[in-house]
Length: 304
Length: 184
Image (tube, rainbow over all chains, first blue to last red; front, side, top):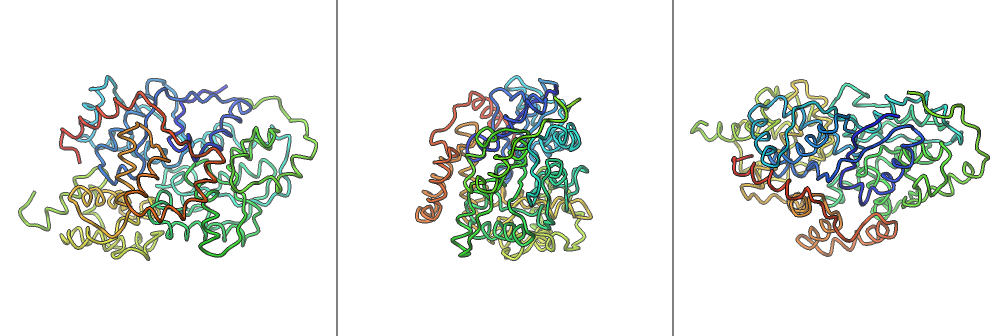
């Protein structure tokens, strides 16, 4: 069993609920335990940086300070939280004037941050700590023949962390492949969904979402396998109906988070894999897989 | 800080965390060429940097530029001088908000509503934030969102009440401390 400090982020309690549920559902079969930070608060996301950067780093630092107390790697499934946490960690280490201000502010609430937390995206944990090969050994319901476009989004891979490729990443493709699915060519796999601008500049964001859906469809994808970021998942899944009305299009493309797909392949049923919360229902597409008799897993548990 | 107005605006931007390398820009234009939304900007990213250095504060901050930054970080990943253009855009947003500029976008209101939600609840209360945002900007625009919002509601993805977080008070103490230090 591997242990991690876990920071879901605000959206996971609302629009990201199905993704969050799927992560919790696969943690045990993957032999990982995600210990949610107690009483966590928002990381600030990009909008707070657009209001006041010093204050933004201050509220992010509260999360880092809480995580440091656990002595564990800090894992988040939200790409926005991931970027913000990593950036604040870097700034506190590099900008001494800022670090001093933040230190004083944290001191006022009895906290401190010494820069020892390793911030990690949950996709990195699944790809790196478990790995596609180990994952493949656990598959009891291979998704053979399922043509998928793997959407990584922006902030899981950018700015460049020296991990997955920042222009054409393939970690989600590798994971999907290990489950038996067939990733299609998807040039826009790391292009933006519009993020929070879908609220204030809807037309601009819907245009971006439209391009992503069209690119996946043109390349023969039956569904999109998205990163765990709740902003990406919601933009593509929930806003798809608004794309259809704006562009008089008929998209009906299920957006399945990679953690939901892992759940299916590991043998969870439709409800347990948290697919009931998806607005574009993947039921019809996945029915043949759910009806097939599950195989025996090659190993009982993923070795660590 | 110099008396010369040009230097002042540049210094102001460069003093914001993560914006300090603005002077190392070589105006290569990779940021504008990479930008996801550049076609909507009155002044695209490369020009924004040039305008900061030329001291064209009013002209820049009155425009819609910088507010279309979707934080995709393509510019930042590709910048050959590592000046972090996306961070500079957000830094400029914060100056525009603080100094009361009125650029032609409601993203200003969205950002404020988002930050208010964090201050009030400790976490972003998504339903409350959307509701307040549309009330403050254009309630009719909410009609377009209605079918989607209802769908999120019926799929149990839009809780109608905020979560109570104890850490909220700590978060506010941190914010107050940083405000008294003249944080920017």
